[in-house]
Amino acid sequence: MERKDQVIRIFAKEIRRILEQARTDYEHVQEIRLRVGAPLLLVQENKEYYVSGSGALKTTAQEAHIVTRKELQETMEYISNYSLYAFEEELRQGFITIQGGHRIGVAGKTVVEDQDIRGMKYISFINVRLSHQVLGCADPVMSYVYDNEQVTHTLIVSPPRCGKTTLLRDMIRQISTGSRGRRGVTVGVVDERSELGACHQGIPQNDLGIRTDILDCCPKAKGMMMLVRTMSPQVIAVDEIGSRQDMEAVEYVMSCGCKLVATVHGNSVDDIRHKPILQNMVRQRMFERYIVLGGPGQVSQIFDSRGCLLYSPERMAYGA
Image (cartoon, rainbow, N blue to C red; front, side, top):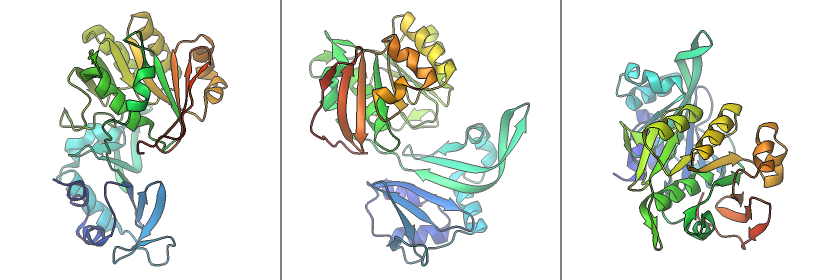
C-alpha cells in the first residue's frame, strides 16, 4: 500500500476527498493537523499550508476547509476501527500508531487519577505525523560513530524538525545489521513514542536491523534498565533524553559496559553544556562523539568527548 493510501484512508470521508485532490507528494508531507473549528493544515518540507475544500494548498486561511467535530469524531472511528477502548493504553500516552508506522497524536480532556493519566475523552485535536525512512542517510557519519571498529557513546544534538530521529533510525539499522565490513551487534531500542521502530501490533514498520530488540511505548529510563537486565544488548539506542531519570539510566547503561546512542534537543554542544541536567554529562565526557545537526538533513559538525572538531562538512542533505 502506498504512503498516500495508508494515510488518507484514516480520515473522515470529506477530508479524505479533499486530501485525494491535493497536488502534493506524500513522500514529503510531514504532518496533517485537524482541530475542531480550525483550518485543515498540512506541513510539507517544514512549511505549513492551509488546505482548501478543493485540495489546494494555500498560505492564507481564507479558503481553508474548517474541520468540524463530526469529521474529527469520524476520523477517530476509522483510526481505532470503531473501538477506542482497544487503544486505551496508547491513548494514555497521547498517540496511536497505525500501519506504515504513522503516528496519530491526540489531545483533548485527560482523565487523571492520582496524578497519572488514565485516559482521554472529548478528543478535539489530531496530529498525523507521517513516518519517513531514509535508508543510508547515516552513511556520512558512520565512520565517526566507530573507534577501532567499536561503537562509541554517541549523542546527536539537533533543533526540532532537523532529522535527528531519521538519522538515529538509520544508525541503529547499520549498527545492528553491519555495514562496510563492520560486523553487526545486538541493539536494544527503547521506543517511548513509537517513532523509531513505529511498531504496529508489536511489529516494527521501520527497518531497525536484524539484531535489534525493541521496547515499544516504554518510558526511556525504565526501558534502558530493563534491556540491560533482560536482553544483553551491546548497544542501547534512545530518542530525546533530557530528564534526571534519563541521565541516571544513561550512567547505569554505560557502567554496565553497553554503548549508548541517543539524541537530545539543542542547537550546539555549548547549548547542552548550559542545561542543568545535561552539563555534568558533557563535563564528565560521558559521550565520545557529538553529532550536531545544523538544519533539516544537515550534519554540520562532529566533535569528540574533549570538544575537538573531527568533522565539519559542507552541508550534506540526507532528508528531514
